[in-house]
Amino acid sequence: MQGFGTTIFAEMTALAVRTGAINLGQGFPDTDGPPAMLEAAVEAIRGGANQYPPGPGVPELREAIAAQRRERYGLSYDPATEVLVTVGATEGIAASLLALAGPGDEVIVFEPYYDSYAAMIALAGAVRRPVTLRPAEGRFTFDPDELRAAVGPRTRLILVNSPHNPTGTVFTRAELETIAALCREHGLVAITDEVYEYLTFDDAEHIPLATLPGMRERTVVLSSSGKSFSATGWKVGWVTAPAPYVRAVQTVKQFLTYTAAAPYQRAVAYALRHELPWVEGLRKSLETKRDRLITGLEAAGFTTYRPQGTYFVQADIRPLGFTDGAELARALPERAGVVAVPSQVFYDHTEAGRPFVRFAFCKRDPVIDEAVERLRGLA
Image 1: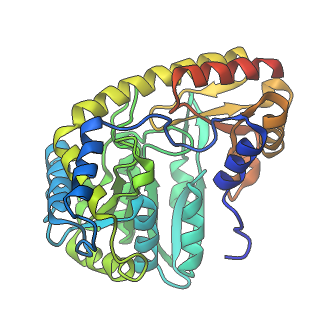
Image 2 (image 1 turned 90 degrees about the vertical axis):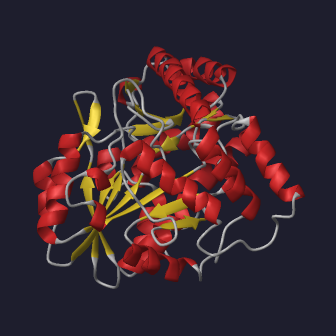
């Protein structure tokens, strides 16, 4: 782990606290999830659900997850053998990579990537092969030839995040077909990070890679409750996959955390069955907040890329006369009273991300308005 150090999120959040700046860096909401879900957690605590739950997760949550995959996507998973509850999707990513990649194996990742991907690939002793997402026609996408060229004789896994953090891209069916074709041709296993599956905007549609022909049997799907239900601190996530992969992931997971918080699991089971209309309201609200932030950022002089999903806007700093996102992000709290995250920390090829910073819009409207008002001074 030498070379990884403190995460950029911890660094920038600490900077926000020290300077009193508005934190549009880390992606957590500043409002709570559905009240009935919160009350379900309280009732579970008061009802005595405070000891170790089963290692794979409480049965009612595994059943609710299986029902969600079936009803929303037509994917059938056995809750007893093909669903595993994890401590957030981050643990699911860690356990999956440690279980399925070994020393010398190669893992393809799309950069910019969530920072835990690189750390977990390193812990597995594997090698990451980044494929760069670049702006094209107002969104970030990959070159199919570059993706094909990344596959070699040691390639074992491909890690796919859609809706994508931090670019906001939602991969199209055509893009997913390209990925699926490579997996089928080369016998690759796909790990898909779908934590923003409900949070898509405009006409973008989240299509799970596992729904494509020949992919259910070679895809390990990761998702969580944190983003969908605005409860990022609960850290309740899950894995759905064919039973042999779930067994492998659980073998690792049991020695990481063994199990996850029992009362929150019960509350999330309730939410998956009863609070999806609330999630749709959240999606619409976030779409409005996205537009609110983009309008303000462009008025301040940034060029923005309109995200199709997630919590985040990528902003190009060059129209303001800046060239290095990391330098600007570290100066921004003192200079403008706002915190952003430099996108280049999510790249192996840092030059590709140097002109961008990431702003989060999962905040209350007055917070967004105050932030963009402060940023106007940069122009």
